[in-house]
Length: 164
Image 1: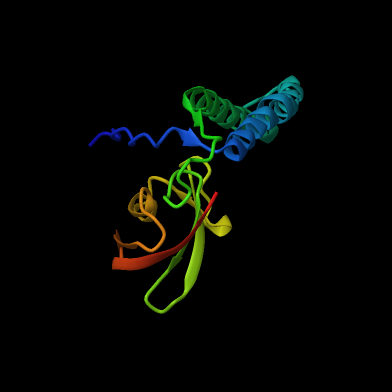
Image 2 (image 1 turned 90 degrees about the vertical axis):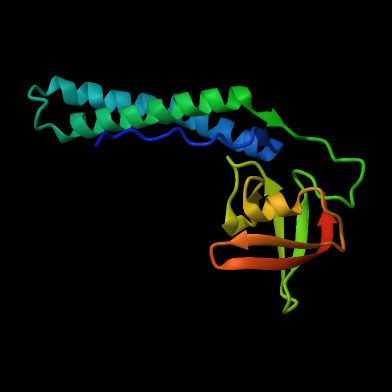
């Protein structure tokens, strides 16, 4: 049995201006700040001779590979991203970048922002546009009911508010 893994499905290429800034800041931090520091540590560790038992050298080289891999990913990803920085004409419909308030059957309200897959963070109520809930919300209007599938079964929400 091989270690073949089928390629992952590509995420959407849309991103908010804030998300793009976060990715560019991460790229700068890795390439201009962290990588030179790790390179200096590896250089000093290499001077010490035997590299087979030199922890600074081994872990430094591993960290350099991680940094280089992430830098390659971020560079390619940022090149293909489409920054969505304009507000749609119809503000009652749900589009990318909208803050949406939904209510369940019990009247519990939750507010989410629909963002790109590279910037979603449920702890900050940022929902990826590729998620089942966001797919059900996109294109709907205030007052609509939506039904979407979750691992626990189907859920139903009522759209009570949309902001941009």
